Image (cartoon, rainbow, N blue to C red):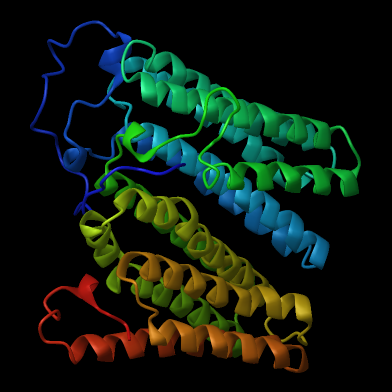
Length: 426
């Protein structure tokens, strides 16, 4: 959301807390008691947060269906706007939950309320640019504005600097809400324009440090953020996206009549998902978390890694899920620019996101990622001349080449080979 203080390494997973105040004799819920009492490095992902994430499983399924049904430039643009909105509402919620304690009843109520509006928003996705635009925009704005209001109230007696930050965030979301609601009242073309402007405002706000006349801008020292918690939250969201891809592959495969081409496409789509998991989790995710802890400006690194850097990673996985669903339904179709943009755009954007994350955390450009991005771009130029299954094979080979290159690099560095996350990838 904005510049953060020092972050810590990525946690190994979810575990029972053995620290802090016992919950059986906890005092009544008060504002200061809604905050986490663990040190920055010990903040765990709570089960209420994981429950909240389930809404986004449905949202991603809805999104992939909507994109598959309209593989036109306009359809892809609309799908992109929806994807950006989904990521932004989830990401801002993750930042707020970094400080609020999910074990407290008012905080759980907040998450349940966000789930309700998230379910409304997800339900409206297929018709977001038609009859259900107001449902989508209203639910989205309610989540962003309402969550910010809750944070302002939660910090009313403690951490005044953090409360001022959320007041700035609230005002920015109020401004963007005007474009969301106004767009929902307009026709499709104007709706596209106004919703795009709303997202430009929202995505620019952290880089502008949520500057508000009279309230100034946010500063790194105003935030109390655990890098370990955010790293785990982002990793879990990536896992959700990969899981949605598996669901799309299995569902589409089950709906079609068996044929050698269908089986080959199924194997290729599954392999693409596995390779994306391998590249993200086996090569560099844990390394990125440790580098944030050791960085000279960890807040700036955390902003670009967790808020912006993971956005293309998620987008690439979503595009690959859409490509898999389309390919399994139409494995032998002739290629065109729209299909090529989806099939090869997934690996292209996914690798670009990983490149961004590793650049921000290590200061290096992994040569394997640069080569993979270049290969995907070249293939995209000739893909309209090929059958879609050959384009899909090219996408698979791009990801396989990146994974093999990084694996070999790991093997050549004995000093770091004990830790899969410590690969340099160059």
